[in-house]
Amino acid sequence: MPFKELGAALKTEPLILPLGGKTYTFPGDLSAESWLLIRRVGQGTRFGTDATEPLTQAEEDRLMVEMFGDAMAEMLADGRTDNEMEFVHLTLLTFHLYGRDAAEIRWNAQGEAEAPSQEDASPEDTDRVTPTRGSTAGTTSPTKKPRAKASAGTKSSKSGT
Image 1 (cartoon, helix red, strand yellow):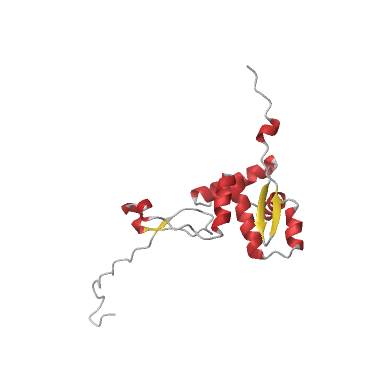
Image 2 (cartoon, rainbow, N blue to C red):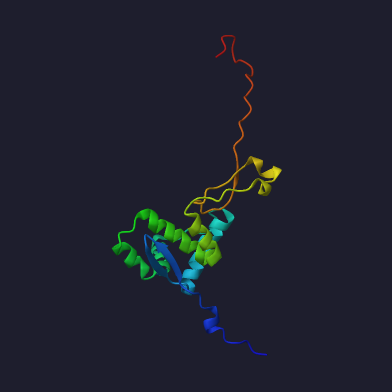
């Protein structure tokens, strides 16, 4: 049996975000080239490493222009702030990496991490630091424990120096 034509079945609806009493519409679909760039970004954030080759400034700029679409010029004309633009940018990255539900969670949290419940914490997690919502890595790292004090050792001379 031959494969069916997918076409419109894979079309992603635009993302509509409310900001300052206005709604902005962002493209749901990106070019294949931009998808590859986003996957590079996602690998670094998913694994909490810089194992992937960083994007060049030209790649970042082109990706941002495509993700924002026509809303970029509209937001600039409306005098949006750097914090608003950055938050929209992070939401768009989340949308294209992890889907609409994850982007909605990020957006509705408004930059604040959701408080973990005590039931969610296990004894092994007590020595870990939970990242803030602003962290793009999404990983936790062990807390630093105080080092043991070094012993005085032997003196090199009778005067102690």
